Image (cartoon, rainbow, N blue to C red):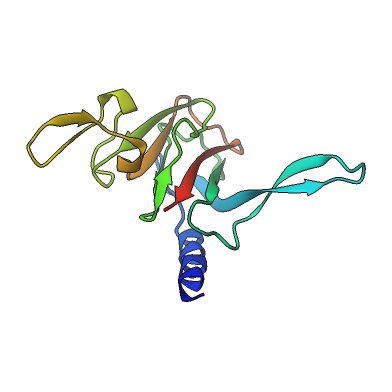
Length: 164
């Protein structure tokens, strides 16, 4: 029971940590983050549906969908906008789950110091041998918008991760 409360508390803390955005000037982009899980339910006709609900209780093995919505709230276009999300310490990125229309997506394995595509990320073992990084090695995800974000324009990026 105590462990379950810790995971729930941890998730509440996680939701309080927003994604980070970098744009040409400050206050161009407003970010909203949410964490959800998928839940099966039956609709009025008795057909099974999968709905997303806030991730209130998460146990090890649960898959959480993290979505960051962005809006350009300024009167100027935002050039070179970047959104960076850390992967929570006790979660593993679900391979091929990242979404972000119109963005270049890269990953970090060094706590956000550098980013690259998965094929160019490598880790080393104790003997110094080089291996391709795996999803459990990722520490951050970065989305770089490929076109300027016009005033009032909005979008969203997301990824899925599994609680260890």
